[in-house]
Length: 512
Figure 1 (tube, rainbow, N blue to C red):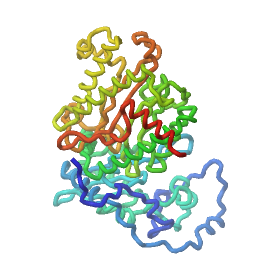
Figure 2 (cartoon, one colour):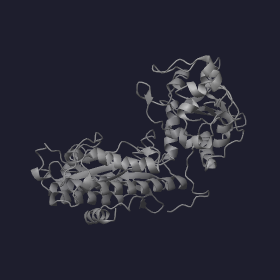
Figure 3 (cartoon, rainbow, N blue to C red):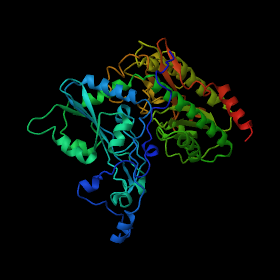
Figure 4 (cartoon, rainbow, N blue to C red):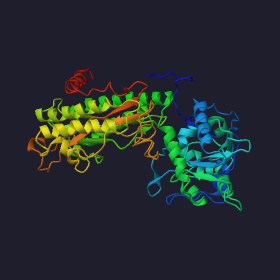
């Protein structure tokens, strides 16, 4: 069923850097200064004379005291915090976003917030920690710990490579973050250690921590079995997408389709898988935050390697290209689409035969996406089709019924994975949800899952006729469970053999 949001359709996102002018807000002590430590220079930096430091601190325009506008749909994020609050009355909940990760030496990967933290706040900045503090009268008070912004009052704005404004851009600051994210209270990150230590003093206050996101937080608060339940609860909240989340997924699917079209246009002149990766990733960075996962651009027999991301092979006419890719939007929701394309625009008879078997399996699986069905029912439907097809092709030497038995599962030699996983803020979404509500649970309206059967005939597999060896085919769509059945969010990206060939031909014939 189509949902109409009560608020405007602006994306669920925050852009603090864009909303905070350099030096904005009242001056605040930076974390390095409060902790009594200096920002460390790089090995190739020059020494800063005191005269230069004094000159750098002088004659800057007064900082603006105007507070930023609240993020779009701040009420949605607040409602999620209140829903989480009701699950854990009288307990302190600690949800970090995580930190930048080192790529090599002193360079870092582009930061991407923790999904649960973003789900509850809309905040994109690194290092932050959300605390839900229980109140005597019931419910919780939001406390968001953020990086202070000293403006131009402290030399770290130009000396600190990790957090200085002239190096990495401005952070919102404490009061600005409170206004921007609509939380009850903001505090500076230098106060975090003392606050968390207060939870485990002479009398330990009941608390739960979202583990694995911040080594600093994990060290300060001893691990408890009850922590796991916080992660489970957040994953299970995220199983059911609201109307705004569905809009975000629709938007990234549409962007992903444009990325696939870019790839098709590039194929006639393309020489390597890496070119395909680059073409798609450009679309992801232009229209969104990034790719939602490492782009799989697998040509020829590389398509038989499920997560081929080296992308260093050649594009050869007459072979297939398996493209598994998704745009992650600025609100961090990601698409996850796979299409298998003939590099020269036409499927060979053998490629068509395998492709149409996989498509038949996918159609059978999608038809089982409906409320009340087991999550695993689409998988069972797809495997029945694949096993029968493998028997028909003479690849299975036992009957499909025998191959499908739990103590056999011979069909899995050629189709290693199940056909579905949840999709949302993470490509493999809601991973900490309990098995009884996810893998062994029932489908419910609002769930979004992939449906992606595949067949992979390894180039050296002597159980497979030679004409099929090296063929790998996967077809993947993103499917919303509705009140009455399903809606395929990626239906506009061609799937049938004739539609794929016509789509490619039309894109190649279009004026450049």
